[in-house]
Amino acid sequence: MEIKSAEFVISNSDVRKCPEGERPEYAFIGRSNVGKSSLINMLTNKKGLAMTSQKPGKTQLINHFMINNEWFLVDLPGYGYAQRGKEGRENIRKIIEDYILEREQLTNLFVLLDCRHTPQKIDLEFMEWLGECNIPFSIIFTKIDKVGRQRLQENLTTYQDKLLESWEELPPIFISSSEKREGRDEILGYIEQINQTLLR
Image (cartoon, rainbow, N blue to C red; front, top):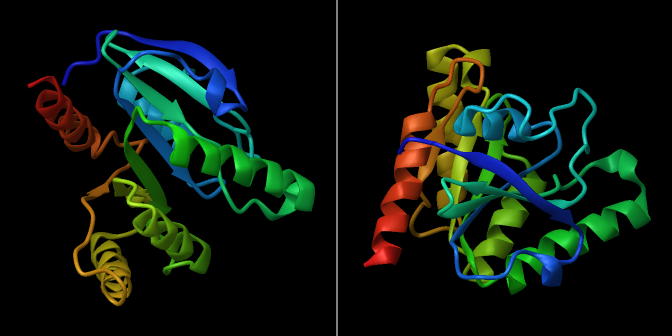
């Protein structure tokens, strides 16, 4: 897929104020500091499209970007940022849950995981919840340039084995590096493939 245009449309905290219409939406979510904004900028070829920050918890709203005037890329707030405080965490949880459960245009949710870490309880519980709610999702392992190939393979195997303890079948899995632009063609190709089935 060639990205010809990527434009910011709207930010808000209320799913009812998201754009109207039936265009498919591909949302990206992960724990704070997983490299979500960098990945979005890499996928769209626009360096400053999503705001990147060294400080976790920067995204606190639902951000819609129109891609090729055909589909929306949605940047969701990161979950599990401890320093946000109980009330702040609860607000973010509600924004995320409302969007995921109520947004009919949500076509696929990409869950981002840092490939350097062992399976984290918060991520596993989140994906378990997605499964219980029948939300279609895929996994993107980020920052693969930060580990050697052997370690990456070991980490991915560990993660897949952990997921198979509670899943009969694994969701689609992608690996990516925003710095090296790895995984871009595969992720965009997957989106294009789904879009083509929707247009039939």
